Length: 119
Image 1: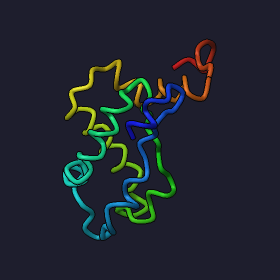
Image 2: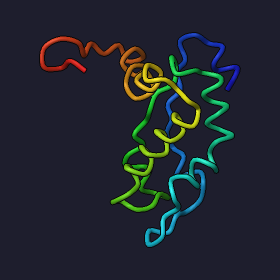
Image 3: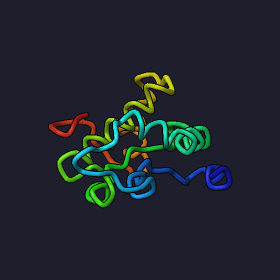
Image 4: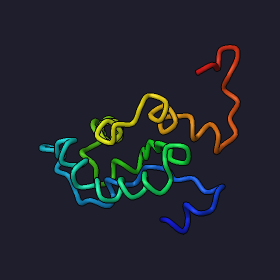
């Protein structure tokens, strides 16, 4: 990760976690806090390497349904995992906005300001 982060035009997307942490039973999905705890060593490292300026939220849908807590919960749980990770890391609102949409806007060169497209 550090070698990739040393390249200025490389960005990292937070996604793919559910497919890497084991199957979750759909009748008793893991609590979001457990998923946060399981992933903290990796997400800490990625955040440390890329910082919010080069780290973006990836919805991971529909892949999150593969081993996630089921179609009804997977996307919502993943979003809560990322929100909880950012809260745990005490990111300020500016950095949270970067992870949620700002970094993607920069990386993909999206012009979303003005008119009905304003964020």
